[in-house]
Amino acid sequence: MLEIISGASVKKLDADFIHEKGISSHRLMEYAATAFCDFFESNFHRSDKVGIFCGHGNNGGDGLAIARLLWRKGYDVMVFYIGDFSKASPDCRLNRELLPEKLPSITVCDERIKLIDYDFHVLIDAVLGIGVNRPLEGLYLDVVGKLNRINDVTRIAVDIPSGLPADGCLEGDAFKADITVSFQFPKYSLMFPEHAEYVGKLKVVNIGIDQPFFGQFSEKKYFLQYKDIKNRHKSFNRFAHKGDFGKVLLVGGSYGKIGAIRMSSEAAMRTGSGLVTCFSPKCGVAVLQSSLPELMVIASESEAYLSDSQEVAFDNYDAIGLGPGMGQEALTADLVEVILNRYSGPMVIDADGINIIAKNENLLKLLRENIILTPHLKEFERLVGACKNHQVRLKKASEFAQKYNCVLVLKGAHTAINLPNGKQYFNSTGNQYMATGGVGDVLTGIITSFLGQGYGAEDAALCGVYQHGIAGELASAKKLRGTIASDVVKAIPKSFVKLRIK
Image (cartoon, rainbow, N blue to C red; front, side):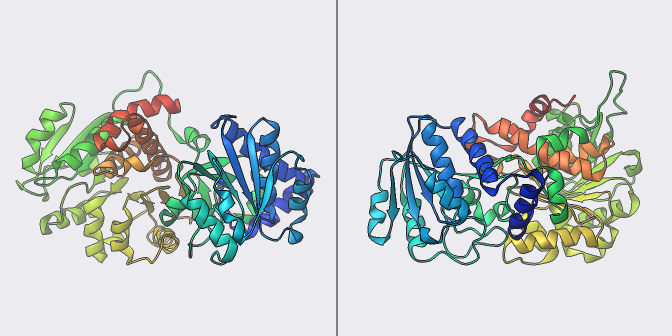
């Protein structure tokens, strides 16, 4: 599990590691540069022309080490010095001395910014690192602005885009990376959606710092990776029967929105539930039965929306998914309260289920540790009020999960899974092509299925969010922005194959 620690703690973390291993700070910088170059070699050709922009701090030192290593590997590299190198950090100064004499370089000042207009294929930003604590100004602002305006290049940030604070929200401008290669762990601000255009695609590379060194700096924030997920999945033997895979109930749908609960239901099936039942309005029965013959359907007493039905034995189910497309009619809101009061098993609450709770604060007291809420950003703000930025939103999400002793999955890029114990996990899978209607309903079905299969709330949320992202990646590989939610449902089986989960 990769811990996310504050930028202020990184210097102390590096110092502890250096002391324990008996190495120099320059050696650790060399590890980082080597890891960056390994990534670079696997993604870029030696024919690519590379411009590397280096400041006079340790981030610039990383850039200079990268320049030296790439040049030795045969890349066409040019270095641009930004800032006052008479004040360079010791390791930056050393890496400048180690540059081969034949490696071309220039010092950029105000009147030489136009010299950046070389025919580069790749621009590497190593100007400013995690120590930034104020908006860019002067030459730094001019250089970053110039780099952001250059067309037909790939922009890569070393550790963090210059100008972006490690732990807070951006003020002013910053380097707009297509790829950010972060060392050892992602910096907290790289998780914020406001920073998406600056971070680009996030890649975390291992520079050899062992996990125990993070312990004293733990802030209970983690970045999910495959190795963290596989062991959380349950395994089943050949003698398992459909009862072992769980009976789940999906509750939702209303006139014109039956598709939402249909996708949740199919997602639960594709995730492996033994038996899936849908409780929907009468208007949805024909659609659901004809499109999903494996699905069992219970009709609500109402034709257009959900209302309580005495025929539903909620306790017969191993898990319930509540909310997709259900609407917010008064009788539907009454049904939500009935289920929360009558059913004590694990549950996922999404979409209109969350909106109903937001309008009826008395329902909040019915939340508990085996309930998972899966709001998108707007639904979450209906629960807690407006948030001026994602930093505030993440803080409130963690506080909500702790206050109401539930799991809160705040959906979006790097979906944040908030646990009652204060831990906050950020997802590493998924992409922008999943930003389409119905994909959240698919997640509801996936997580509900895992709960029904006997996963605890924490494992169901983590495995569900991670695998949902993998399914989205697989579904969009050839369709890109043409991807729709049904494509993600169809990719769920492939996600089990890719993750080697039997």
